Image (cartoon, rainbow, N blue to C red; front, side):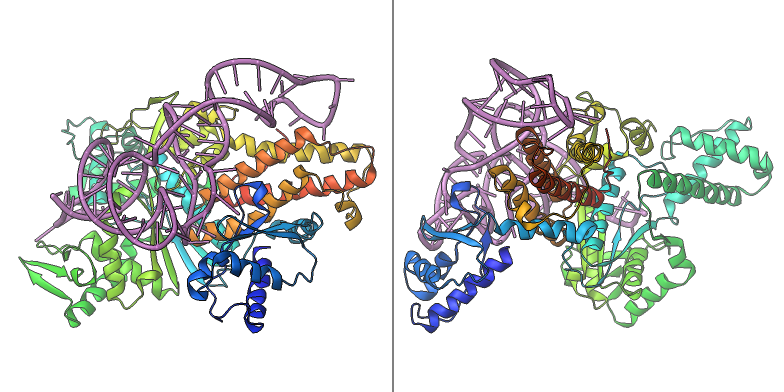
Length: 554
RNA sequence: GCGCCUGUAGCUCAGAUGGAUAGAGCAACGGACUUCUAAUCCGUAGGUCACAGGUUCGAAUCCUGUCAGGCGCGCCA
């Protein structure tokens, strides 16, 4: 609809200029918006005001010229007003809405899909938690955001790949191995001293116990280094399997689990460093190798090879991001916890050094989650190993509630996740509010079938009966859906879908309480069935972008 | 000290490209089930958009500064 009005206005401007009503053929971008106040029309444009300085005319005069030259060939517009400082307000004929309503059923599960991606290969990397301990709520938020962004992009025509980067090399993995090996020794009766910098959680003991079952006391006879290595590999694999399992029960399936160690094994890390050396963008200082990130916007240069000869995490991360582009992705999205934000300039710098555009790389920062129970903070300490895992949360509140709640805030904001609230079936917990719409409509449809009403395609004459304020406002809400999806895709902000769904749900519940769907008038009944099944379709489509189910009954 | 995020109703938060009278939900108060699911709806009340300047026809939105809270500033990941 907006595009249509844009077209009409452009046409009017051109005509007005040709007929000498306005002097300049230069027109600013035409913006159509839905006024906040109903009495300001169905749509409005500020084009007359933005043109004022170019045309050197008063906004109202320009507006008059535009209105005069609008050629409404499709008979959509009831009337046009010029209001306030120069807004042009459009009031549509009630019948113009039915064309938009029909589109919902026409496009079905694809309704709302705007092809902005045009097949562009894009990768979304998210979660990427170190395999040194179970996933917690914070990872859950990253998972919900990443997966939903991937859903939305894919829906909008991007060729999307979901990837999980496994940090299976380096010091943390070694620490994991040491932690497990110590517990292993402890289980076999040796007296140990368990250092603070080792992983304290109970899961370490469980893993050690499994190794005892598997290997009995064999590892004790091996050199420590070898035993630690075995424990590290074994534990990391086990933890990774657990994460896969947890993520699957969160309905998240990755296309690729990418190993950091693999970058070392294939020599990619060393070859990247070698190429930097040849290009003189890497230099030696204080016995370490530094990469020049400062000339590309970082606040200082960064070490890639330490004094002790070991590469840093940054080194493999450079190789990793180059590898992404080598694999053909035109754009690369990383979903990170906000505590890593300081890392963005150096990775961006590395990407620019590699000859890529900085626009090809985008980080979605997700702020912290605080876990609460009935308003009181739940103690979370990785150090003591006492924390509520993502698995616990899913088990307690359910996948749908968890995913929905993670997406009820913009990622820029911290989020309080209250376990008691998430379980409650009230308005405080909007998942059910939205899902209830779907279930309610399914129930009406079931009822209609019991009454012998067949869901046949509905005539235009019947649809024209949808002319009450409630009917029109529901249809308007649905017309807004594709715009919402598109904007959500462009901004990579899934919470916009969440808020939209809550708004649509409110409009439907209001409708339900004021208008009966199943009436004595067969024509009206079929029209309203058509209307509400459209709402059901949009709710289902939106929920699927969030990764939340649409139940047929509740 | 520097960087990033946040500051909007009592509480939790929406407010893209600057637009008309700043919106929801919760909590409070008053109503609506002989009728398609009351996990619902309707109504009332609630605001110096942290503060101070600036930009312009017009600012919650853009710029500068200040204040408050969070996060980060390793040859850790």
